[in-house]
Structures are given as structure tokens and as C-alpha cells.
Image (cartoon, rainbow, N blue to C red; front, side, top):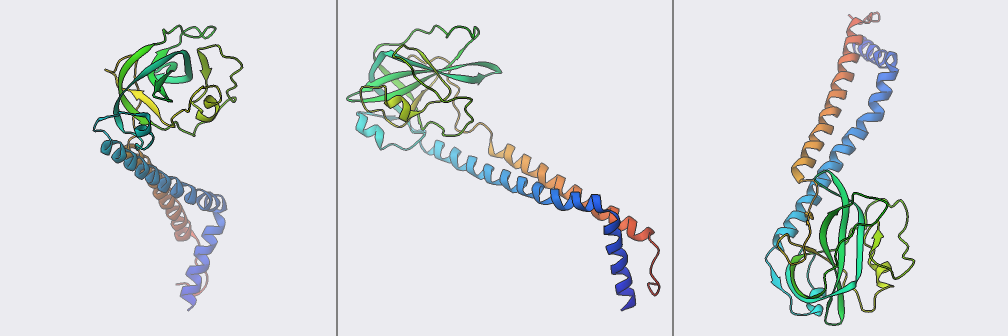
Length: 251
């Protein structure tokens, strides 16, 4: 009994003598583990998105606007319609190959419905003036993927459209806001053009921006750090315990 209590007291004393290390370990170990599990969750989300995109990659020829409304996200489609040339928007802060530019959004009419068309990326060199990009017009047949605009992202300011002058600069695509300025119902998904489609600029859309494998790698790093921290803590406490004088009866 004395041996047990003596060893326990010495070990407890070792922990108390290393308060800073103990506090650091207690605080940061859960954080590191949570970050690791969060990356695993992100990897699974990305894997599901990629499976969803792959399942919808067979091109579907769309005959009507009503048909568009029932299609799943990421569906690869071919559709015909007429561009409304008076409408054009630039989505700011879009990156392609390390360069900053805009995504160019046009408006397509199919029957009595409207569809936003993301033509792709265009460089914006002179920030004092909007890029000069010719707007398409007339009847076209387009190919691309239907994508619901992301609700995520931090906005520096809310977009406010003050007039009917186009093109207009946006921070992100907000369907509810744009609908207020349009004469016909706007469908909820944006058509992101394929690179070989008519009127495409530089498409850069991908189902995921970071692959599941990268998230698994990040998770491994966080779990590795937590293991390293735990090992250092136990090693330091053990060394202190071994070098401490044993209480009477501890031998």
C-alpha cells in the first residue's frame, strides 16, 4: 500500500511541478483532436460532392425551362436559349492560376424563364475601370454544369444595385437580389459553361477546390501533432518522476 501511494504521490507531484506544460497539454490536446476530426468530416463531405458530380456528368439535352427546375445540382446539360444582351454582371475577386479577375455572368432566356450563365473568368488589370467584355446576344446552344450559388464566404459589403446600368460588379451571386431587377422568373441554378461551349471565356469551376486526399493529409497532421504533444508531456512527467526523491516506504 505504501509503495502504491508513494508512487502516486510522486507522479502527482511531477505533474504539479510542470503546471505550464500540463495546462498547455490540457488546453491544446482537445483542440488538435477536434481539428483532426473536422478535417475527416470535410474529407467525407468532399467525397460525397465528387460522387454527386460524377453521377450527374452524363450530358442531358434540356428541352424546356420547366425541365431545368427539376434537375439535380452538378447536372451536365446542353440547352438552347436567347441571350438578353442588356444584362451582365462581374463577380469580383476570382482567382485563376494565381491571377485576380472576375467571373462574367450573362443572362439567358429559355421560354418564359431566365438562367444565369457563368461564362468563366476574365482578368481585371485596371481596377479604376470595369473590364470591357463584349456581351453575347442572339440564340445559342450551350453546354455546362448546373450549380447552385454558394451561400458561404465573407462579404466586405453587401451588393447594392443602384441603377439599370450594366455591367455591374458583384461580390457574389445573390439570386434573391438579382430577381428584383429581372422581368421574368430566375431559375435557382447557374449554368457554368464548359470550356468548349459557345461564348465561354475561361471556365474554372470544379466540384471541389480541395480533394478528400488533402483533407485526409491535414487530419493526419493534426493527429500527429496531438500524438507528439501527448508523448512529450508523458516523457517530461516520467523524467521528472524518475529524478524525484521517493517518499519514505517507497522503495
